[in-house]
Length: 622
Image 1 (tube, rainbow, N blue to C red):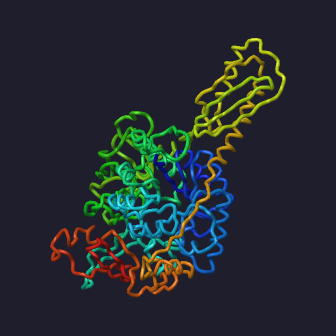
Image 2 (cartoon, rainbow, N blue to C red; image 1 turned 90 degrees about the vertical axis):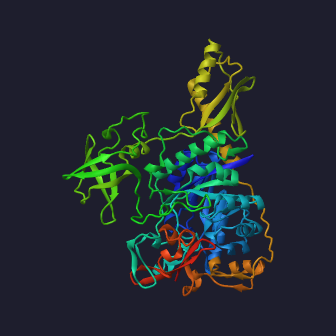
Image 3 (tube, rainbow, N blue to C red; image 1 turned 120 degrees about the horizontal axis):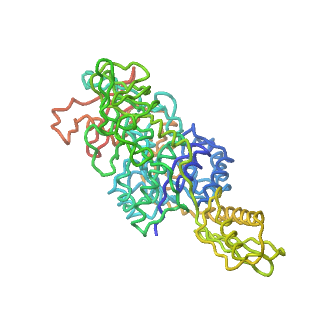
């Protein structure tokens, strides 16, 4: 039976607990250093607390230590891995292979998506290095996933939701070149979200001042079952800088979708324990998004123009309908609005039941800018904005702040419970309570005391059953309560004390039960390479020696070490501007497209674009 994992981001301890409470089978969180999101570091104490909490529910904690490392940082990273192992972390994500040459603990290693795990050969390499899992490149399609699964024995993890890097992860150096802040060091300045001009070979500006490299967000909810059948065992949501509302909504959304699939496939089972009823209707359209794309999962490209977000890199939210401006007043035609998506089965069909005072609405104005405003009032199909809007006749309207939905998310939205069976026994040496949970963890507690006989034994049994069934405030829910007999009089305080002791010990037992086992890694060098170029991101001698073990004699250091950008691609992308603009030479007559080379221009910076049509790739040259 395959174990399927829903993997959520944790900015910090509270966000991690929120993900667990809403059904996450695992969370990934940044360590105090060496994480690819430098702004999302956490102390060992907080990570240990999250480990204890996650293991209580049978869930896992993965920690990111996935930056490239310099020689003087290797020892600190090695010690950090031992610290994480000692507090019971389930796995660490790494990018720098130099760590494999050090004395590191027997902990599961996951190859970060920063390792550019895009091909069968690349994944086979990591399997020979002794990794437990690879996080596949976001660009990997279903056919390639299936091929990798068929020809390796390594676990496969894939992103299904969240923000997209326009460049292959780990292959982007433009932030380092332009600002000194390296994406491979957790400091990405998000140059891809800024504005560019596009110029042709003659210096003519074809597109002016647009976010030409800014992508929409990923949503692959329609492909979960196909990805599972292709070999994915971990479905990953991006967002280690996102807040708890985002985590609540997205976790609940994918938990429900995956559970519906698992119900029809007994050969699969989710990793964590318990069931998670939700007290709201999750909707990822209502959470931060730049609109959505499935991003190459089908192997063919999305329709022309559908992958990018040229006008804005900001959250645009859910489509509402059309906003009309008539004599200084604003009217909405709510073509897309889901009036029943908030709480009750039907909130009505008038605009006032679906848009509220305080909602944030937005549209792309005549200048191509995202213009947002708060709603000050609703009268029929007319809305009253809090401020005057720019002039237009008709625009597509979006909502990026749903006040009612956010209010729901600010309250209690889920309650994860683990099933337990309880046995109460009255023996000669006292009374005993046994609790067995759904995973087989068992505890038995008792009191060797003399008890007075009950005047009404049958009523005492019912009183005892009622008291034992009340497990509110604990992770457990009684599935069955077996009381063969009860002839003694039991005080309410005595029963509750016995129950509390059993619950406490069962929680401790579960944490012990789900502590990960040591991982035996096999490092199996083969002569796989002759050359390791700068795209391998080698920044220390230990990492270099790994490639030497695998046959490489021609080795280049990574750009984070050399900073030699001349003539090198500072971005390598599956995303192609020519395709996105309808100029793909495979789809149209090349003579109808602008002459190469094309250039991206940002201020005084000018980047030549190279197109490899055989690989369907675009390179931004430094």
